Length: 353
Image (cartoon, rainbow, N blue to C red; front, side, top):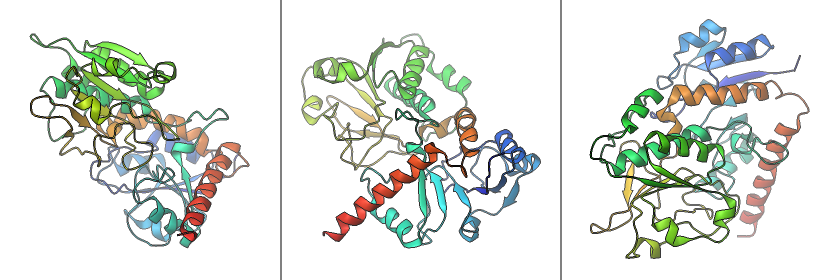
């Protein structure tokens, strides 16, 4: 039986974060394999604390991970609170700090000060670099769905969590709807697959591009679609998919972009038409002109709008990997190595300033 210490699922800081990295049924699986599972009683999480307690988990107040023993794995999804200044635990989450994003150096500095570790879920990969636990399908599905609803003038604002059934019903075409032509870049991955599925539910004509189609980008073809969904995860700077010149091009048909990847503020930003992520309260930012609108949706927690479906799928991927945490497992070793190399690079950069 694998040796597992304590897994502590913290409450999320964002009031719009309703997902859980581990659902109650999978928490029971971890317990059955000898883990201790502690769950913070988050008021935002879709799954109530009572369901985790019924599975055998220990329930504690939100934020109490700060006082947990150092051998604890603190499990979450999105950003950490600004305190404490020194982070001493092993944190499993999407840190968004390994590609030079805004605030990355500060966050990494907190881990350096406390001798803690980031086990970043984005870098939990197999030998070929494929992510092993991801929300990508549902991010693409929701992102494409929001683009359709906005283009048709039926995007509910502020956004609120829903179900796939309700979203699909909203996506169904109505009499008088104009035909839609959607382009998904990164079409063959999980995110792109979800985006293509949602566009088909909406009755749109779908074009899917992947690596072969983006080596020599056909900008005229990009501009000729109504909708664009960027589902590309990049690890190095690349040519943007849409530029200021495309926005002002007189033949542009493109009217709505959903940037699922949301690499805002990093050198990897492939949709450099907006400078800050958008939100549930204000999901759309204008990048065009009143005469030729072009709107961008850049929400960085899209799957939380379908929290049950997204959490259930992600938890099924992550749970067997958590069972290997305290073993000499190459998957987690790669995660640790990526953190160490990123921290070393940032430290070296700071020392040369």
